[in-house]
Each structure stands twice: as structure tokens, then as C-alpha cells.
Image 1 (cartoon, rainbow, N blue to C red):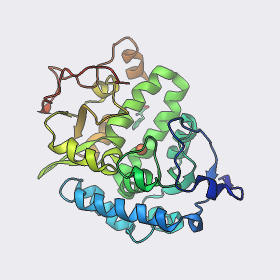
Image 2 (cartoon, rainbow, N blue to C red):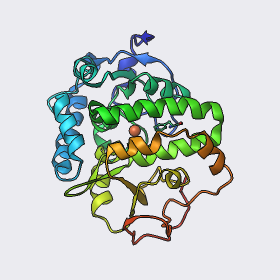
Image 3 (cartoon, protein in one colour):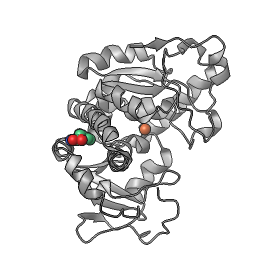
Image 4 (cartoon, rainbow, N blue to C red):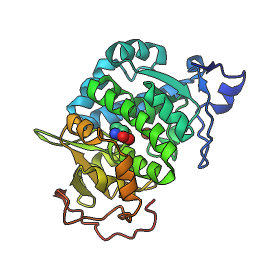
Length: 300
Ligand code: PHE
Ligand code: FE
């Protein structure tokens, strides 16, 4: 693996800053500059960690909470990737690698296919506790990494990476379909537990507002997982989701996504997309959102 140490001075320059609304696509894997984190950075981690853990008891899936405990993350300090990797590699063969931010699609898929999860090394500023426009360390580490301890989910993420490499070779429409699957499972998925709906999506668990909204608001739809339906459904990147898709188990997710997607992409290429808030007659509806019929402006 190509680990490029940060050039001198870069830590200071990027210290708890986000890069605004324009994603910077750098491909390099970087060493986590742990000593460069300031007291403010550690404090942002501590505040977010404590706030979310309190909120997530009874809201996040047992699988997520168990996995996060098993990783030994604490609010005391920003975790060291090396220490988490000792645990993670033994559990499922996954490795966290540090990155500056979003990666080009193919690079990202190749990391996943090889069981490497890219984690943004910098953390948001104190005034960004509730929202920022791009993934930071809290979203990536607190949101994504715990479930990589779960053997079934760990396999799903690697399979997704291989599927991404394949879709990239097929073309941009295939990638749109596959990205919607990632969005509605890995980022914003809900799971049906014996005691009710629970969160497993990273975009939700790392957000205070959406952790409450996705389960307790009457506005969004909550609909049973359906692969092709999801691949046809547009989504929101700037507001809470209008629709959440609910899986029964990670086994269901693995099985539903195991078939070759190539014929599915070919079929979907001739079909239109659904607006983010649509409910279909064929849907398994757990909750029909009161916001149904929302304007489609802003659906991507
Ligand atoms: N079965 C998918 C394909 O053939 C690969 C995949 C698996 C994609 C799991 C996403 C999740 O492309
Ligand atoms: Fe994410």
C-alpha cells in the first residue's frame, strides 16, 4: 500500500477545517497525524461521541451498538487508527486508512474490495457539530467503522467494492444505480429488529437530527428493502431523506445483492427514476410519510 506521509505544515493548514462545498478529490492514503489534533479537536470528538451514544441507545441497531463497543472507541480522545486496526483486522480483516476527503469513485471501490476503509483524518469545527457538507472523521469513524466489525456487514461492504469496480467498467448509469444502493443501505439504512425499527446507516448514526427524524417523524416514508426499487430511487444530499428503506437482516441484504447486477443495470437503463418521496403500490409500507407529494426540487 502506498502510504504517503503528509508534507510538513499540512497538518496545521488543515487542522479542523473543512474544505467547503467543493470536494477535493485526492487519491493519496495518509498517515493519521494524531499528534496534530488539538484540544479543540479532541473535545469535538468527545461532545459528538457522548451526544450520539446517548441518542442511539434504543435507536441504533443492536448490531451497531455491539460492534461499536467491541472496537473500544471512547469519548476520551480521538482514536488512533493503528489501535483500532489491531482489533478490526483480527475481527474481519478490514483496515482503516487515512485520507484527506472524498476519493474518486474507482479508487474508493478498490479500497473497499480490498477491505480497506478510507477515513477522513480531520474533524469538523465546534460550530459544525450539527451539520457539515462533506464527510469528516466523526462521520467516517463513528458512523462507518463500527459495523465493519460485524462479519456479515464486513462481507457486504467488500462485495459492494467489487460490484463498484464492475459497475465502473459498465458505465455511468450503472454507477448511478449502484450509488443509490449505497445511499439507501450503508448511509441511510434502517433495520427491523424484534423490538422495532432501528438505524444502521452511517449518515444517520453520525447525525443528531436525523437519528430522531428517521424513526420518530411522521414526514418520511419507511419502506421495505427492494433492490431494483432502490436502484431507481433518487435521493437527497442536502436535507433529511424523504424515504428510508428497511432491511430485515444483514443476511437479507447479502442475499438480495448477491446476483449479478449486469442484467439489472441493462434493464434499468430503459426505465425512469422515482422521485425521492414516492410510494408505489408494490411497496411494503411500514409508514407512509405525511410529506408524500413533496416537491422534487433538490432530489438528485
Ligand atoms: N452482486 C453485485 C454485482 O454483480 C455486487 C454487489 C454486491 C454490489 C453487494 C453491491 C452489494 O454487481
Ligand atoms: Fe459516509
